[in-house]
Amino acid sequence: MKTFKIVTYGCQINEYESEKFREFLISAGLKEVKEERDADLVLLNSCAVREKSELKLISRIGYIRKLFNKYGKPLSVVTGCVATVKEREIRRVGQKSVGLVMKGTRSLKERINELKEFIGIENVVLKPEVKGVFAYVPIIFGCNNFCTYCIVPFTKGRERSRTKEEILNEIRTLAENGTKEVVLLGQNINHYGRDIGYKDGFIELLEAVDKISGIERIRYLTPHPADFTFQDIERMRELEKLCPHFHLPVQSGNNRILKLMKRGYTREQYVSLVNHIKNLFPEASITTDIIVGFPTETDDEYLDTKRLVEEVKFDKIFLAKFSPRPGTVAAKMEGQIPEEIKKLRQNELLSIENTISLKKNRSYIGKYTEVLVETVKEGEMLGRNPQDKLVIIKGEGKHVGEFVRVKITDADMMHLRGVYE
Ligand code: SF4
Image (cartoon, rainbow, N blue to C red):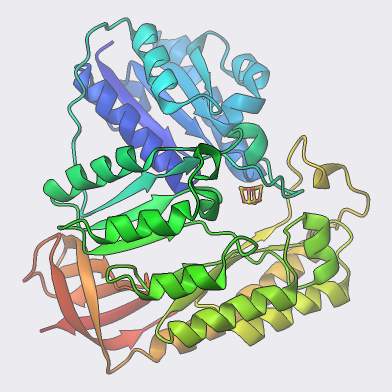
């Protein structure tokens, strides 16, 4: 095998893992290509959280099978969430073009070893390639929560934390190679370290990362509102490099639905957590995830979510229609909501969110914000400010990896625009 291509679906953890597979394949002497038809091997890193990405994966496998039948290549290797739960379907659709299926519940190290055996290259010395000004760093894999709609505990397995030393060493190496911003990752990041006997593991890890020289910004995803304590937020206030951005998935604004989802908090507890954050971090942006059309959700219960959105005024909402995932409790519940009602609720919330986001973004006009430049192209620089807003900056005077002070001159729902000093 001489060439490869990687296709990634889903979350930042999958992106991180794909990057590690990529480093491995390059270290093994393979060359990365853009098109499947030029590749000897296509690695598909799959996501099962939504039905849509699962369908996209299956259709991609079908496309690769057609290429394989015509040209005798590429072979596909499928990993990630769908590989855990749908191996038989993957093999049925891909037939001989599927060379290997690696379950997402297995550790990255085990899967890299499987891949090594599959491509038949023995001695690979990993040459980590640090590319970006920001990097994802997983700190805990899997989830123990079993929210009733979610497939993650089945596809990624139970919680497994990396040791603090391993994580800090990785971040120090990243910093030495020019990374300025790290995004710590976990399905329920507040649980970090519990499985390996750490008390206050997550906040203590943040405090340790805050001291690493060269790292200028720290972000993390995803906290769980039921596990986020007021004391954590107070200790976060003391950190120099932590960005004022809180992504707190609420999922619903109605207590009966939250209970059915098994989320472990009430609407009132959620709002009081958000208010505590707003008091301690008045400059923070707050984003969330919401599911509309959970089984049995009535119009009135949906209206509770709508009122919550209007009350909290999120900077951004990742909005999904409920989609039944196989094996989950919610998939078998009676009272599934018709698609057209889900769509109506989704559209209404989207339009409210657009108005709020636009107003919030426009409130930056005339103010200064600090942006870490991530890319430069066609006369513009692109980066993010501490609140995780995407900022487009006129001019190419600065380079990737530099911080610029930007005066915001315009804004839409998605971006801020400005000029640098
Ligand atoms: S906490 Fe998140 S990952 Fe875990 S089961 Fe709930 S929704 Fe899924």
